[in-house]
Image (cartoon, rainbow, N blue to C red; front, side):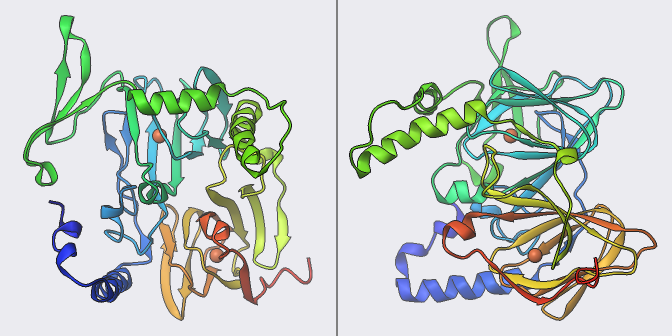
Length: 375
Ligand SMILES: [Fe+2]
Ligand SMILES: [Fe+2]
């Protein structure tokens, strides 16, 4: 039995609620707010980093950073790298090109991306990406995957492995007739499992049927006669929308805005016309020697430092950062960024949008960015 479930049934609800709350809070408070990146290494997909604030599964929550929902990882495709693996999952991923350029293949369509573009893959869509043969690319993937775990939508399928897969410790490849690679076996002992688990390539029939039906739903022509019909229609509208919408948010097409928080460029938010509304994702530029506004929101926030160095103040506590670091801003924290470098600082911010769906969106502003009133 996995640890969090071991003793739960024996303890009264009103006790375990407060015990778990106290334990989680203590754990979150003990974790650093600025993380150095865990390095990339060869995997079954290609070249990837582990999840920087723990994997999508709830068991990995609060293992590295004080975030409950946001996770992220990095991928690199070197020039002339082997073809990467292909998979799908229910959560809609967003992939940000930090350097280089390349292509993204989604259910038969290919989309090209340049540096600083954001790829937006609709839910349960087969995806595979590759880099430009000459310069390759590096990709940062901010994700809200743990929400999927809470909703019972963790399911993911591997369809192809990398052309040259590296199998992790504790696993072994499985071959069928004529040496065909069928998948891999997770060996007894990994995370305490008492027998091997086979991870077979290809679709799981029930999920395949559900999602094929959603994909194939055509436009809606019938009248909407009652409340129930509105939600039958929704399936058709969602399918239509995913078919038509672009899978790339182009950095060059989005405008910079001077805001009370500073100079921001939004890539995705819940009202943008994209196939994901799981996150707010935006750039934040801070001039040399300057600072952001100071604000607080209920949502947690994960920030990748693209350029520069400086520090944050989170509820009065100082956290230093530099290029490549990940800043974790816990839920309900008053925060402000300060640029200590000679040049601009460029941040790439992601927040889960689910808070807004729960009636917990909105921002309290305590101090405006110094440039804002006189722009
Ligand atoms: Fe993926
Ligand atoms: Fe914020």
